[in-house]
Image 1 (tube, rainbow, N blue to C red):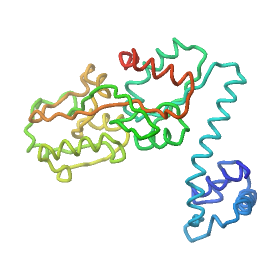
Image 2 (cartoon, rainbow, N blue to C red):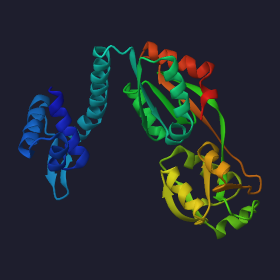
Image 3 (tube, one colour):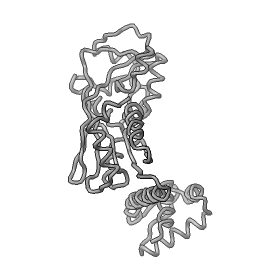
Image 4 (tube, rainbow, N blue to C red):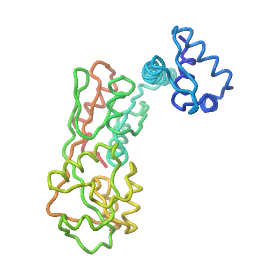
Length: 297
């Protein structure tokens, strides 16, 4: 099986369009079609069918698509590691992390680790926690950082401690304390449902007898920066991780509101696939265990 044929098929299913796939891969549409036909011949099955919505995978095509994502991810990482070897660098470490820790805590830790390991290459990407877990399971990523913890027969989890979220308002907000029954009078900007922190918010509300569906939720967003901008402009309230608002609290563009002693507690964890051994990976895990957490930004 040719890896380029598999990539052409994967991109076509991803975009539901041969033309979009051709555009991304810098190939003609007939070339993409031919690659898919060759792949179907190699696998002895039909992978795609045309519809009014474009091209969609057959049941066999859906199965191949799921495997293709893993295969291409591993293949691309292998090429990058080989390139690193050819350039005489010591090692390459791939990290996938949930957005909050990736944007607000981890950068300083990675900088400190890089100072101690000058000849390594760090590749960092931000994904929701469920996607991070998926990448670690498939072996395409060395290290993952997630909200909460996850373990199975192949994955180890190292808790990094307890963290907090707070109700926040603009810096000139006058009410520093608010009874929970008053929450329903204000507009809210909430972290998107795909983010694990949203589940923490919903569970905490349930614990304190607050129906989140009755709040005036104006926008659900995966971007904490967007939510901070809306709140700082005085358009409403939010619940955000403390590590994401430290700067704004210092500059007084945001302020914390106490609501009937409600606390949002959660954990971050490092996860890794223990079946895949790599020296730089072990070195990074040891660094985090011994001193990495103190370098969180």
